[in-house]
Image (cartoon, rainbow over all chains, first blue to last red):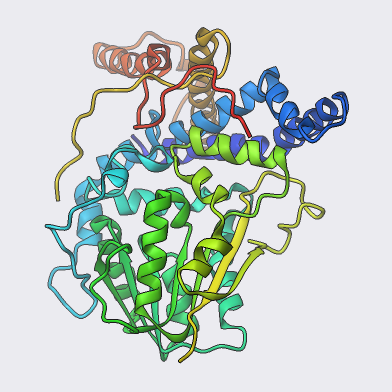
Length: 355
Length: 105
């Protein structure tokens, strides 16, 4: 497959996704409003309107395109997986360092990967992030269009999150759970150059790529290790800040609760936990889209996180100052400024009581 | 690291009352993707042609030789598989299987 063909096909898919994100979304939203207005007023009206919308022809195409544009992005003739597989040996030369050095990640080949992690190919990425050496590179490319309208400013969302956490605070030891290939980790590395950052993930391919990117940038204050965030090997009270970005919605509710327990254990008294994820959903229409996305995009645990009573769970686990805040992923993310499909970005924040 | 294991394909999700429409949409979108790639190559080619005198455009419709014929045949097979594979209604990646799901909020 020639690079030019791959690029052209991916451009087409991105353009189609942008059309879906804007024109089709707005039409669906207007259709929902009409359906809701046509129903008898009651507390069940929004729910009935969502059921009616799912029988609408355009909604069916909306649903179809959401699933299949993603499928074609990864698996089609010009998909990310076949394109990168053809270039495997060159990619591995770029990812795998010639020698172990201080940047090399600590991998655990015997680490038992959870069944929930292996049973679904998240994001419709065949083989997911654990079973192929080049999976990290494929994911890195695919992540560029996770939020289609952000385009080249996709990095902004991670920097905006880091800036939010940096406001008036400084940290010495930071743990980034589910760090992937380091896209969420790097803004912390750059923002807090005197801090030490640990990035952990289940995916060895992602960690190798993250370490290579750190090596290339000469970032010495970050270390990557293969671990399950539900049960890490860190000592009690090791970190000032425990964070994650887009991790919680990819794991079952039980795993989320285990993760909160682990975060509490490794946090120092007075330390902060902050997760950027998807939780606060403004209305039933957007709830339908979010739950539909969960099923259509092979992200089966999104609904669990959305319906979890986080304030109750976190309080029961000993956290205080629990806040669930809507998050703007870019300058024009507010619906009034840009009426387009977007995730229900939420910052889930809490602190461990000080002694 | 283990290589990707082969998995039995799962039945694809469908959103229309008649699943044939879902499968047909797959073919339509695959075709659309191919058309765009073709357009891009054509635009690139025409751009190059306009800049040089290396190709006499009037000769593009002459019969092809055996090597070119074989190459075109191989390309047609790959092209056809890409266009028609969605009609099989099988998933490329592991996901939920359902028919006519109505999400209860």
